[in-house]
Length: 389
Image 1 (cartoon, one colour):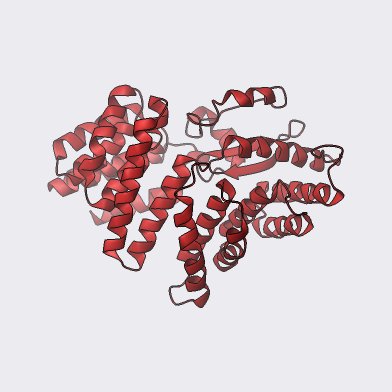
Image 2 (cartoon, rainbow, N blue to C red):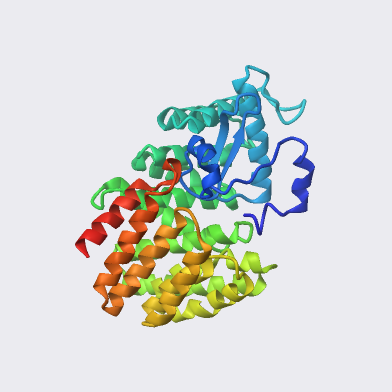
C-alpha cells in the first residue's frame, strides 16, 4: 500500500481533512497506543475521532485509491454519527435511502471498531437492506460485513453471503474481495458440510475470474492465487496445486518486471517465497530476494525470507548467515519468526541442541516485549517446541 497506493498524488487533496499518522506497531515506544488499537494484522487503517480518540472506523487489508477515498468519507461519517451530528452525504441530490444507508454504515463501522462483531455484522446487513441500487458504499459494506462474520466465527453465514452477492457485483476490487473472503470462509467449514461444497462450487470460478482483473491490486490477486493453491492442496489435488502455483509464479514474475520502484517490487517478495515453496522449487524465488537484499540493505525482510529459501535448498550456512543479518536488522515481535527459522535451519542441519537453545533465546526475548506487543499464543508454541526439542 505504501509503495503502490498511498503515494498516489491524487490523495493530496484530502490532506486538510485528517491528521495523518503512520504507526509502527512493533516499535516499543508505541506500545501504549498500539494496545488501544487491537491490531490483528497489517495493513490496518483506522479513522480516530479527534475529540475523543475513539476508533470510528477500522479496515484490515489493502485498498485501491478510490476505495481508500471512500474509506475516508465513511470514516468522517462515523465520527459525525458518534457525535450525534448529521451524517454528510455525497451531495444535495443524494437520495434519502442512500443517506439512510450511509448512516447505517457509519453505525456499523463504530460497532466493528469497538470489536462488537456480531452486532456490527447485523448493522452492515441493515445498511445493505436500506441501500438503493448503485449505492456507492455497497462493496465496502459487503466487505466489512464479511470481515465481521469472519471475526465472529460465522463461516457458514460468511460463505453464504458471498455466494449470493459476488456473482452480481461489477467485476472489480469489491467483487474480487467478496469472492475471496467467501471462499476462505467456505474452506474453513467442515469438509462434509453441504453448504461448504455449494459455496466452493460457486466461488472458486469467481476467484479464478478475479485473477485476470487489472483493476484489482497485484497483492490481492496474488493472495487469490495462494488461496486457490490451498484449495487444491486440501482436496487433495497435487497436480492442480502445482499448476496453479506455476501460474502464480508467472504472475509474480510479470509484476516484478513491470514494478515502478524497488519498494513496489519487494512488496510481493513474501508472495514469491510462498509461490516457490508451493511449486516445490524454492530456487525460483532466490534471484528476486537477493536483488531486494542488495537494493534494500536496511530491510530485515529480504534476509529473513532468504533464510527460508536457503534452508529448503539445503544451503544451511547461507541460511544461518541470512538469519543473523535479519536478526540484527529486525526488532519487536517480528524477530520471533526469524529466531524460529534459524532454529529450524539448525535442526535440519542436525544440531538439535543449538536449535533448542535458539528457541529458548526467542522465548526469553519475547518475554521482554511490552504486553500489548507480545504474541502470547505464538510464544507459547515456541516454548512447547523448545521443550519437545
